[in-house]
Length: 242
Figure 1 (cartoon, helix red, strand yellow):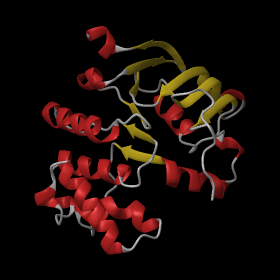
Figure 2 (cartoon, rainbow, N blue to C red):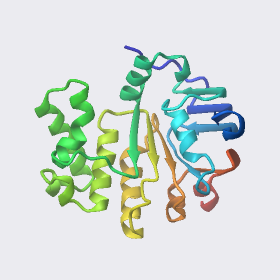
Figure 3 (cartoon, rainbow, N blue to C red):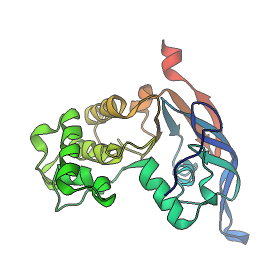
């Protein structure tokens, strides 16, 4: 079992320095990330924005340890995950990361509470206790009346809140979201982001959201804009609006 080491920089969940990612070789070579320098602070919601194909999801995957970098340095919660074995990397993600995807990936045969409880069940918690904890979290997200509904019986926004609960149930320190509002209308997207801010943003936790949905930019503490595999600027919209 492994735990993260001390943060290399106080208050920073993710530190990327000169990170590159290359796919293929020769004429098929694609430079997806071109020297990324980025810090994701604890206690804040950071957004990665930019046009399709600019490298947002690739960077998210490298940070989450789903892809190896080609060069550069990256630390997540004080750990260089590329130095971990495959089994250690899986264990690190299970304990310390929560994932929310555009496609909610809920299990159709399970209820909302059972879907949200999956990370606890995988970790070996007794089913009754796991479902009880998931139910309490879902009630806090306004889904108390829908605990026993299956995914097909839930709206898109309700499914997304179940996905948030599943990502948060094991109290991870880094939550990563890939296009969480892309399939939602404006009102549902606003409700989902309000729920994410309410339950996910904590002083000892960081939230990293990949999006091209400019309707939700106002929810960010920091916005890192990407173009052609590079970070071209970092803005702090909440501070600027204050």
